[in-house]
Amino acid sequence: MRDAAAWLVDTGRKRDAQYLASDVARVLAEEGYVYVKVTTARPLDGRSTELIEQFVIEQTGANRVELESFVNKALIGGVQIETPLASLDASVHAKLVRYVEGVIN
Image 1 (cartoon, rainbow, N blue to C red):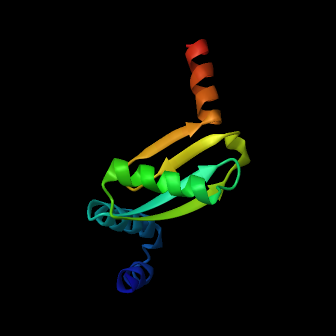
Image 2: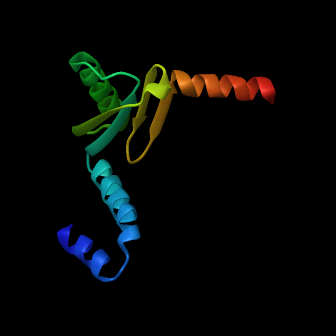
């Protein structure tokens, strides 16, 4: 990975680093190691983290999960879960947006 990163810098292709990282994350996910980005309106407690990890394992068949959590108060409530292969937006904000779009359309 370091060699790949150095090559991207040396060839002036730093912007491509995100694509390389995304591809590596997908390959790892297919091999059972899943990086999970979780965003909530408030910090997760230990039990909620365990439940989300278990959910990801059940849904993906992963044998190892690395969970990183973020807080975004604009979500109001609920959760956003992103893996390299899928995402779930069960936030209150997303539900409100879908509702408003349904009413307007």
